[in-house]
Image (cartoon, rainbow, N blue to C red; front, side, top):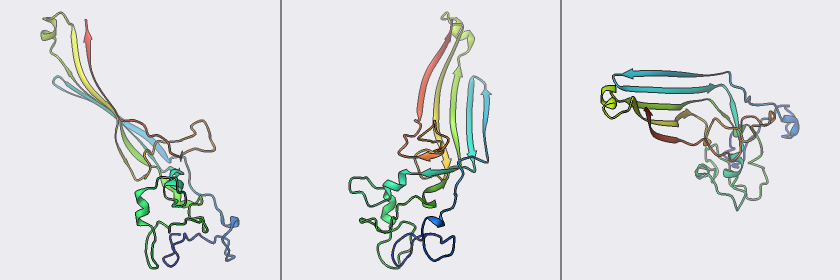
Length: 200
C-alpha cells in the first residue's frame, strides 16, 4: 500500500482484517497472459526506394521484475543498486514509494509483493528495412541483372511503462510456472545491417 511516511517501511494490506500481517494476508496477483497481442506490417514503395517494417505489441500482461528485489533492496553490501534508491525514505514525513534502507532487513522491505509486479504492455519496432533498387538499365551495363542496397535494423524502438531492460522477457522460457519473470535477464539486442543484393 506504499511507504509509511513515519517509519519508512512498506505498508501491506491486512486482507483478512485481523490486525496482523502474515501469510494469511497473501492473495493471488498479476497475470502473465496478455489480453491480446498483435502486429502490424507494411511495405511502402516510392520510385526506387522500398521501406518495410514490422511493429509488434502486447497488452494487458504483467511482469514480475525480480531484478528489483536486489537492485532496490539496500540490504546487500555486494550488490549494485539502482538509481531509484536515491528517492528512498530518509526522514519522517518523506513521501515516496521507495522504503528506507533496511540494512538489517528487519521489515523485509524487499519481500516478494505487488511492489515488483509491473505492467508488461509494450509496442516495439521489431524490424525495419530501407532499400534502394538501382535502375536496371544502369546495372545491365556492367553485367548485373539487378542490384539492391539496403540498411536494416531490429528491436530499434520500444514503447513501454515497464522499468526493466526488456518487456519481451522471460528468464525461464521453458517453464510455465515462471512465465513473465525478469531476473537479470539480458535484453534482446538492437542490430543494424547494411548489405547489397546482386542478381547475376
